[in-house]
Image 1 (cartoon, rainbow, N blue to C red):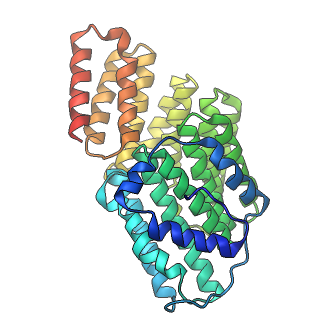
Image 2 (cartoon, one colour; image 1 turned 45 degrees about the horizontal axis):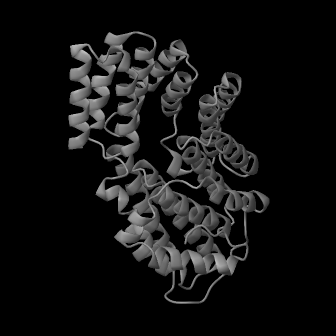
Length: 366
């Protein structure tokens, strides 16, 4: 359940309602938390790329849906994003977005609304589904995340909202990248950019290019990664007062791009560039972007260690653990475990074994 991407808009709406209203009990959630099946992304991505937008129609069903209902959903989405960034996808406030989908969004899908309200409802529900998917990715529930992402992409198409679809598909690209499906991640990011190129806001297109750059970095393609990263920065710089700029992507700043660029350069084996990008990323406030700041420090720590700079690597690693021990995120904690792995050549040293032991204890407590 949840992997279908119906061509027919009525079927899509019916299945989306059934998905969010019936499947989200705790036992089902845990059972769906298996590995990513990359092949299950192929048909949804192909169908969205072929036709990214339906024309929303009015519906007569249950209670009347109005702007206040949409505002309520967007407020819930904004709160979930904030808690996810600060405390991780396993935080109760961040993961409660699934309750919003089940008890607040799903009943509205069966309501009465005009085509304009319907379009707004589908877009808001798509964003909630995307947030739920990313929280599942953050906690390592990749099969569940995949289902949520496909629902989010289909709802964006139901809304006739190419921009929302581009954002969802670019986030799906990150999911594929994190699970090692680099070629598919590149295809998704490129597709998100190309379909959104004439309809999406610059910040959405920058996000797609950043996702593409990360995948190219993992593929050790420095030229393509650099080109995509430069385009992302140029797109952000093109934003002027009055430019359409989605609030849900307000976190994507030059400092945020710099944070991801540190990891891209680490993957490319370019410590010098990673350090340069890291200085630009210092502008990110730790109290708001706790997880991202901690991940950047862990990435930089592993880069220094690989370069043989043990003292600096351990210092950065200590800082990363201090930050990420406050975050409920399997994904973030895996970055610290990667630091431990890079320390294997020095495992006989007392300070290294003490460092690894403290890390393990801190993460277990978190």
